[in-house]
Amino acid sequence: MFLAGKRALVTGSTSGIGLAIARSLSAEGAQIVLNGFGDEAEIAALCDEMNASHVGADLTTRAGCEELMERAGPVDILVNNAGMQHVSPVQDFPPEKWDAIIALNLTSAFHTTRLAVPHMKEQGWGRVICTASAHSLVASPFKSAYVAAKHGIAGFVKTIALELAQSGVTANCISPGYVWTPLVENQIPDTMKARGMTREQVINDVLLAGQPTKRFSQPEEIGALALFLCREEAQNITGSNYSIDGGWTAQ
Ligand code: NAD
Image (tube, rainbow, N blue to C red; front, side):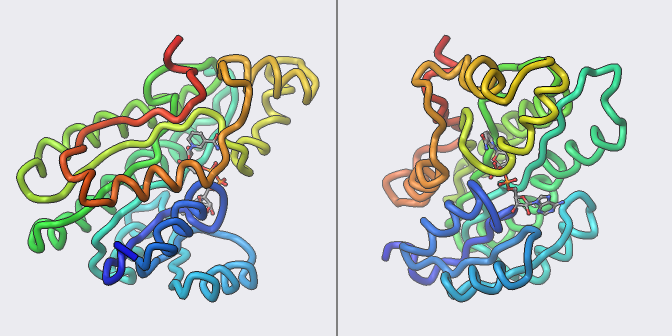
């Protein structure tokens, strides 16, 4: 239980990758603060399962981010994971979707990090982990806001890693390729429409086309890497961007 006594906030942790990260940190004794939306009874069950608390703040707004950090209290591990997607050609991309994606996938990480870092620096230990994406390294058509936000978060993490380099606080990105979660499943209909394809064609010819292993990652595999980055052995890993993408960005 190497995380006993540590407090970890995982944004967007009521589902998918964030939930798997929260579970892996909880299994090593971290006190978890969950964030994200969903069915009240299901969230209560998650809190019971992990002996966690939950703050359902909307991270597309600065006020929501500030509310989250105030209610979470000082955290030793911050996982910036909440994210959303929208698939559309740039000329039809709804400006309000652009604003929401940049706000959630990029700007919320700035707000949570700026508010979490003082406590981490003061105690000389901390971990900031951001769930970026293969789209922090390469692009795909019809995902302009998402790719812009994910390239942005990769740069943000490098910057804060340098700022915190001698403080005992590390900052890293994890960049998954396609992981089987609701975020991926929900973009299938729009991709079918944007590309005029069937569901099977979208899965095989679009989603897994660039993933040489031809398999989706499982959320637990992302949780395992996040857990490793919290270990003492990872203290000199900072400013890195770890791909878990079945070889996608090796091409
Ligand atoms: P998901 O849709 O399963 O989960 C998203 C989580 O974010 C949920 O808990 C949801 O309630 C929360 N959320 C949504 N809007 C929010 C808001 N305004 N404020 C606070 N929380 C909000 O998605 P996922 O696939 O688990 O994605 C998690 C992260 O992983 C995202 O940053 C995503 O970009 C990234 N990612 C996912 C994949 C993939 O293939 N699934 C690949 C690469 C990167």
